[in-house]
Amino acid sequence: ERPMAARRPPEGGGGGELPEEVRRQIQEVRSGRSTELNLTGLLHGLSPAAMEALAEEMQQLQTLTKLIFAGNNLGDAAAEPVLHAIGHLHMLETLSLYQSRLTSRAMIHVVRAVSNLRRIKNLE
Image 1: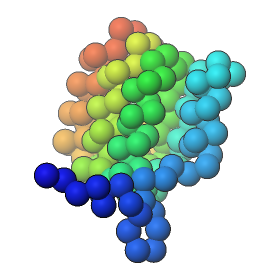
Image 2: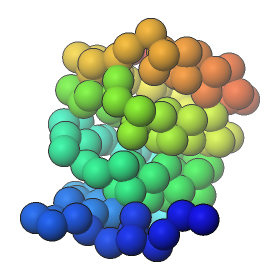
Image 3: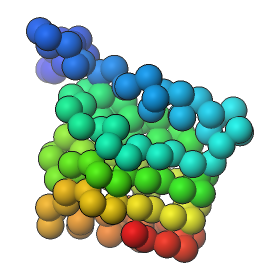
């Protein structure tokens, strides 16, 4: 049994809260005003619970033209749900991982996710 405490922020903050800019962009995509998520450098220091929340949001978006993860550390185990969520998108024209830290394990998640996409044009 997993305690619900995992959803509460630890002492000093940093719980499952997504940064305001990330929430704003997700809302723009949901409302149809945008088809792009630019998360450049926005994932630094996010807790595993926040990464899980981002993954859940991404799975509901379905169609993006651009998903930019540039300049983030995607090598942590905490980022795995986010990388896995890429594969739930129906269409993605560009996935940018430029200057992101990736481990070989993270790259395997990226390759699996991209192979699940119906369509992708650019992988940076």
